[in-house]
Length: 262
Image (cartoon, rainbow, N blue to C red):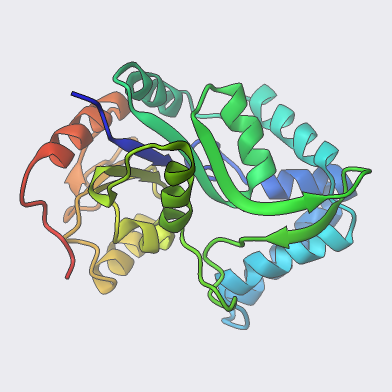
């Protein structure tokens, strides 16, 4: 029987320990200037002057104005890989999934160009992200498909683009067969639609607990994977080892009567 499961793998904070677009901006303007802007944007969110969606759109536009280009992304990806910031346990899970015929697609709100570099480096089936258009000199000249930007006229989710990706390649698609790997409940739009979610190494666990409850995600099929204290999010299903989490996810996807949020 053909395996129709698809792993939707998040990039920043999940596959890698870091933020690729920030690393690319550091490569462009230097660490001090990049961190000044990064801290300013974080303060804007904390003080509720801007939403995370607005920050995302502003970040892409601001970086493009400063001259962000392909070379910056390429250098950033090489640096992340060289410094060992790609998580080995996630790569083991990817390897296990691929052996069992599962498609693994990197889906991120960050740069699609950078995501493709990671996908090619680690043998993933594809990459989806915020699409940038580059000029002849490699500099970003336009931006399209900012995923999760609620300020946009057309709100695009990760699931929308994954469905489109599958359709173009003739890959069978069913939301129930999608296994989402992410580090944050900020991916709630995808979590609500995915057959199962693996919440991997979430930071600020108490925040995730409250946020998941508030947004009606607790009755979803969520496996929480911690490091030293995996039981701190008690209302979520627990898995400790990443390959084991993939196996458990497969079993749950196959089960009938999955709890769904109405």
